[in-house]
Length: 415
Image (cartoon, rainbow, N blue to C red; front, side):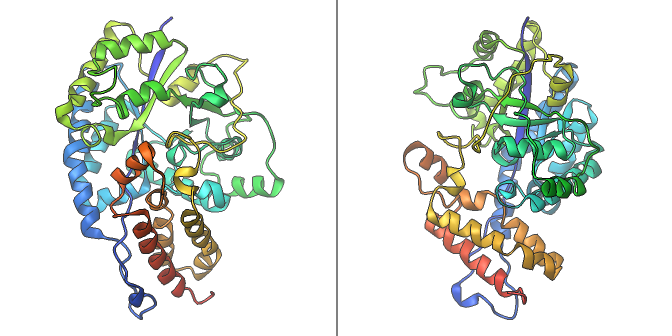
């Protein structure tokens, strides 16, 4: 029996920081922490290259191939920038939603690392995101995707207690131990501390759905063939044809091949002249000819009826970033860890202050990209970090972040 295919796209834009001079910290008039001109410019560039043409293509494909479907998670900071810089982009996602071929997943509203530091903040952000998706698309997400696929057994059970039936994760080789990522898994059973369970249930955005949560694993080899290797002329698979890629899916076998990637793959990371849009346009036709079905994550979970589901045991935290697929993209050096510790040390004071503006700034400073820009890795992973960073160096990223954070701290009378 042929596997089905689950296509999931992450859609995210951070708020990049403006340069606050050290002499401006603590002045009476609060500075603007974010570079709105840069953010607008980047958003509109990616909108014209990726979001608008890719959404138009998907809308066409949904009408042409009734069985074709995809899933998205739209970060809250992306949604906020749609409201500020791109109502046309938001409208295009709403048109896709009306086709009935799209599932929207839940995530942390501010694309944060809160799952690693503050369970309460994590729950508050996820709840806000669920409420936003419900308001914009009339969908209530049942599947959760954490920031950058950051995952552990502990995070999976928090998501379960919040009412989610499924969670996405990276299919890492050392955890699979020779098993295929193309089948659903479950985390090992265990109980969280009672006080933590009580707090999670208090913040739960969804009704309780049972004792189990299903884990869908990214097939990183096939996903990265599109996301990273598609235009690499030195790659043995270049040029990648839809027919060839479909043969690889069929050879991969299993229940469902999960292809997870950044949506910006289409037109931004892989430019239009690489043929990436033609590749996407051709896939549904080839899949239909080969009898391959696409399913959204909730459909995969609903259709999985195996009682003896394998356990995916992630004692240590994993992610989909870099070669290590761990947390080193955001917590790999001293400046990253110092910034993260300083940020969350302000949580109690921020929330006691009760000022909506300060809380929103603090939460925008939680976005994982700020720490990603501070990464000091070398070689291939370092090149990827440099590609995404708007700053000249990791140390410039830290300087801007530190100045913004110190000014925010100055605004809190309780500190």
